[in-house]
Length: 313
Ligand code: GLN
Image 1 (cartoon, rainbow, N blue to C red):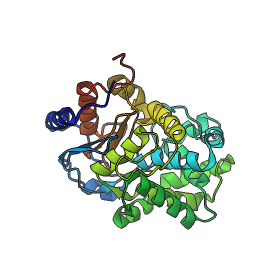
Image 2: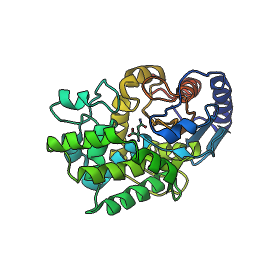
Image 3: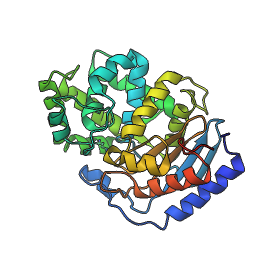
Image 4: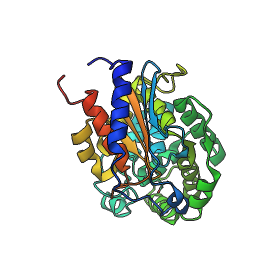
């Protein structure tokens, strides 16, 4: 169908916001200590359409760390930089059916990370990012994420410190992959770059624009910058559809019918190909680590705006 009109999107955004606001299920993540300090009532919703229009409700300018949502965009940047064939072989595209930080998933696959949206695959992805040093890789990532967002993004130092002090499991995952010959860069340095990319500060509006860039063949709808190619967007969205919400990806696709990616700080980005990006922020999470209000609001928008990619009309 066509891109919904401005007035229709505005009404749908406010309605979805209001309805999701009544939901208080879920738990704020605190395995990264600083995340536990988030306001469980914080909630923002933004739709960025491919014409560059922004439709916002609630706290769309409240900053939070991007966390796992970075995985989607770093994967796209890598595919753009080195081509998806090499990435596919080394990182994979299939859902694990297990938690995002599962070690069992790696063992079951004989040391293969399975897909770039779980921590193992994201670490393997970050290791492959162009640049001979960790600093170069980090600059490549920060610059790329900023182009997706259409503004200079920055690291949240407090989040970076908090996660660096407690990310023992990610270090173990990187070492395990290394033991299977699947890390293409120093494991400890890769974890550090990955931790930095997860600590990048965004708001719901930034996520919406980043999503809209993937929705529009890689062209940022606000800056008109071609960030990645249309082919890279297609491949990235396929991976998100299969694994963007971890072991809940099937449920999500069935309910919402759109590729999306969640992060443990409470962010969620959803892509309606050819139409829009949806960014939400609401810290309480379901058992798989996906924002509860984000999912509810996005499901509502998908229905009222007719965004489900599997619908005939
Ligand atoms: N930085 C977090 C981690 O590696 C990201 C996890 C997430 O957002 N699901 O554990």
